[in-house]
Image (cartoon, rainbow, N blue to C red; front, side, top):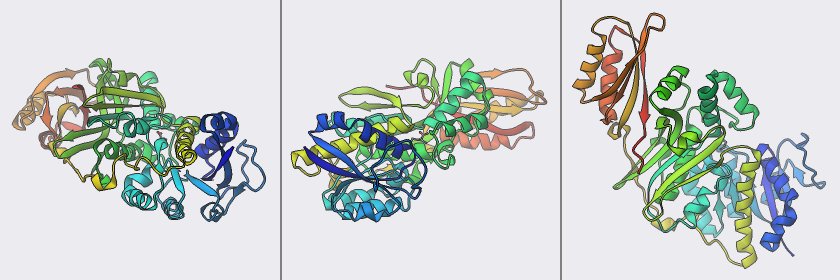
Length: 435
Ligand code: HSE
């Protein structure tokens, strides 16, 4: 049986899962491929920690060149994450004519343009299913069976750590910091959890989805990104009272020759399927012009699920090797020459409904002042909740009708400057008009 040699860079959580899957399901994979995947080398600076994987002597090395300079290795799996040295290793692998599988969303979101064009020139494949949604095969579906569609919207719960934290905060009223620690222990969080909780990891994944769904390059820094660190138990409780759940959503919409691209905590109606996506699970909801709405759901993080997507990509490449053909599908699912450069719409132009929570002194004239500032800025109030005093202030929650973000920002600047307002007002965008 034909053998296809694979080199793995990075023997951390996901790398260990990949080694376990390649070795443990070796016969099963061979029966599906008609070829055997051989894990020839694993490169990692730590060659001593026991990962619970029985490797042949000489497989684990601290020398990256044993993979990149090895002419017998056809497929390189990059799982070290981060920008450097991952970028150098990936470009070296491509230059050496090796196919690349990576889970590195940060690298591709910022340097994908260069990596994809080098891969196209070299005639090799770059596959990155594990970079978005862990084990969920959404990128393969966009590039594959759904490829004929024009996509209009992307909604995603793309970060297992944030979703796990928000779920526990909602169900148990737990404290943010304690739950983050659990997420890290479960292996969901990035090495630097700031990327998770500040929404950056979600924005990286959104950049890849935007690129694939809308056939465009994406200027990563133009994606509006807001994390979950300011979400409080009080806002979660008010959201429930109003019939909403709070999720960190990635939102992408095609609007003429521009795109909306934003990541922020979002209130969605509790009866939306996405509101039931709990724990480290992820979901991606796309709308295509022929398929209509379609939703993918599964484990978005963790050793085994992510390994499943990585090995699936390796098998995809191996199938082409077995058939004796080169790359069939470009990295962005579209010829590089056809990829567009759509601009991201400024946030001020976004229109949606808003939840705003004010913390005000309980005295006559407060509501009139708030309503006046909203009215002067073209913002119409849909409903309002005022509960009892909490300490020396009273929370006032207002749900607006659809308003432009520019107007909301101006109104809040005015209101937050009032003496009767105790702390910066909280704003959460609402998404409840799904087609
Ligand atoms: N840190 C990521 C998450 C892992 O929490 O979803 C998967 O990319």
